[in-house]
Image 1 (cartoon, rainbow, N blue to C red):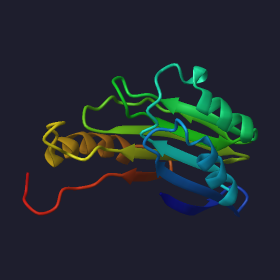
Image 2 (tube, helix red, strand yellow):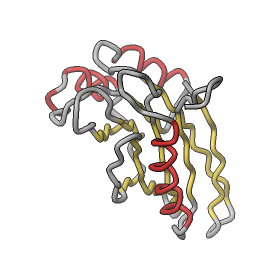
Image 3 (cartoon, rainbow, N blue to C red):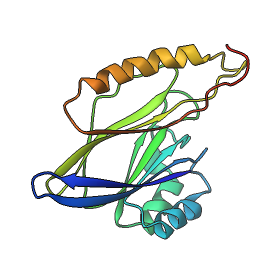
Amino acid sequence: MFLLQVPKENLATKTALCLRFAVWNVQSVNGKSGSICDFVISNRLDLLALSETWLSRMEEENITIAEITGNLQDYDFFHLPRSGRGGGMGLLLRKGFTLKLNEVIEFKFMEYMDFNITTHSSTFRLVVIYRTYPSKKNKQTASMFFEDFSVLLEDLVVSSEHCSAYWRFKLPHGRAR
């Protein structure tokens, strides 16, 4: 898990906003609603990004999501499922923020969420990236990931918005692959 407090200056009013944000590789939300709710409440989070939610496209039918949003009634849940088995990314966001999903490029070797988040008169772009670890089973290599990642970075660099990017990925060490 990664917890970060992001100070954000509102240039229009010269006031500082503070966003409490965490990223969690949850490896399935199913059966973890209590832990997720406890983590959000105990850390007074405004936003929790979840990787590896393992939810299908029918997340509204998921009992775990109903439990989470039932216990955290001041939060909305957004989900970007993986097109295959496992994976998927989710975002728990405190109500009062406006969320706009930016167009997402579907990559083969990583998943990511890309949102514009607005509160009052301040907007920032949030990109959360997840990548699985290369293995003999999935036949992925670090170079395959970096090809996808460089395309995403090229897209983000030309963006005119303030952008915060957070990622969770392991890089192989030792012998080069």
